[in-house]
Image 1 (cartoon, each protein chain N blue to C red):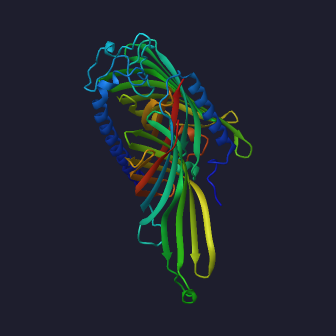
Image 2: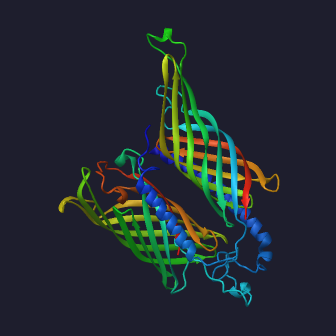
Image 3: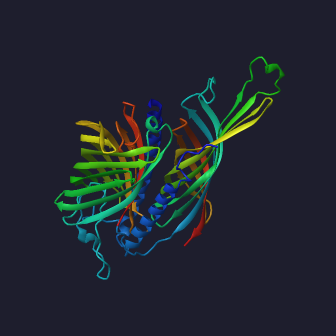
Length: 212
Length: 287
């Protein structure tokens, strides 16, 4: 397992996070007190197909540089009465699935071609601005990239790696109940290191999990 | 690099389209409730400026939004990146954090470089403010300050700043780095454009850094002469500033830079003689 250094496990990152939290608390303490409006904790569930464009061919020798996939995502945002909300985002996404034909002198004795999958799990901080049912935001942080190759007479081989990515999302919600809203969403994922750009037209359901 | 620019441009276009839709919807709703809004007892600190800016761009008498006798006075709202004119004598501090990606050509892998930012802004004359900024990731430090001229026309604002600055870095790690130090002196002109909505402000900055002199030392012996009398960086910064959590003023932004020698990675051997892409995400809160 290969991890990008210093993203999650490094002590320096934890010190940085603690510093940020302390600064935030200090600044909030110095802010004037004010009459609060409604605070909400919002849970948004999203399902989408995905069209991914690769900078290089997804498999060496493959002719295509695009792939069809899909995934489901969830984000939990704290919305303290203003436009801005902040929270966490995760999910599971299939980016690409390919068949690698087995060729060579020994191909005749192989039962199957090789089957390769590339999936991703976002582990991101999300921020968004919400106004009158329109929600625009961005998720920043690592994606856990999972690769799996199996087939032929070989044992399955898998690997994983943390890579930084950006997720842009924009959605418009329609009321479907007192605490439930549903609407279309467009997500765009950009993985710079691997050179992947994914477009995901989605459907989202938002639930006000907590109001106070 | 070309593919990266194209992909990033596509993402920015998508975000711009969605943001434009947000503005359009918000403006329509704002117009329809503007009369009702003036009757609200608790006017938010962020919904008015010292002189109320009407959507048409003209200035309205601040008395039109005078608070009731029992209410506290309405305070003007100033943001750090938005080049709106500040009243003489007003000032604020801002602290925050940033994360920048060290260029692949230098690091050969993804390395996020965190940093701590402290900023100060003060109105010293009409339309002129003093601006200072200090950024540190302990091993790399950057300070620059200068005067900024600000002007506004309705909700739009324009600013031009001239900063001079100093960069200093040091590092000593066993089996990795000897006692390495480096410094640089630079000039930094900044062009800022802003647009203020009632509930938030959007601004863009275009920055160039011109290095007068830079040097590095290993065990106090001069190792090499760095960039001199040349342009080292081009930056474009996009920022959204708004209140968050009561009256806490928050700046969130993304900076995209092209640099010959990024200051964040001064300690790495830069054998690549080309412009390097340096993205940076940052946020800051006003104290």
